[in-house]
Image (cartoon, rainbow over the protein chains, first blue to last red):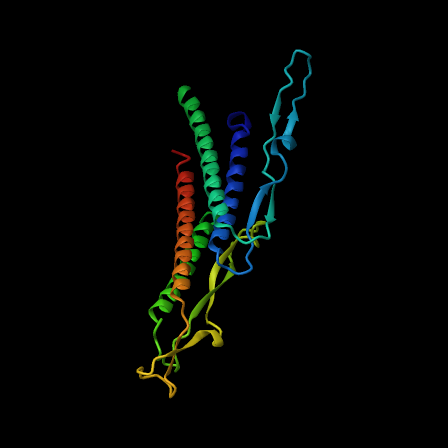
Length: 124
Length: 143
């Protein structure tokens, strides 16, 4: 299936997964604003994704282009407890940012599907 | 379904803030109450929140991290701080020296608490809105 769908879909879905998990943490932080002894939690990327997943294509001739592609994988994230009280402004900013990034992933994914669809329509 | 967890958390947050608002309003309404069924003047109430775990069927690493909120209890303020003595000999509840025990409620504190609760409630509404928007967007992928 990879020749048709590529790795974009895998990467984007794992991105959506990461964002929705982060969204859960942010809503949990906001709901617990007034809870005594509650500290704000966060989800962070574990290192740079691109670096860890870059892979060299094998070439059998010198005339071949040595293409590099990003190996699709599940985004590795780290759960962090800030050990600080919940800061509403920070949480709201995180909420907005996370929301936009999620929508971005969704938009890219639906564009990918639309392009596949238009390819399939053309061959009819 | 994991996608609905934020809705539950935001809903619990809204309910908790509403409970707090109810208690604050009750404190303000009873600022001059000198008679209660338990006897004595009204005592200032304080809401205490605690975290509550979200029961999710998914075994994810966030299972222990994502917490919802619940009202742990509505407690009375400490006995020595809950009552203040006011000199008002004409009052039917005045003692022999002319002092009346009235609730020790500071209306400014209550109003500030009310504003904070209002802001927290709004924050929960915004978070709920964002969750809903994300869900709608996801359903739009196939369109």
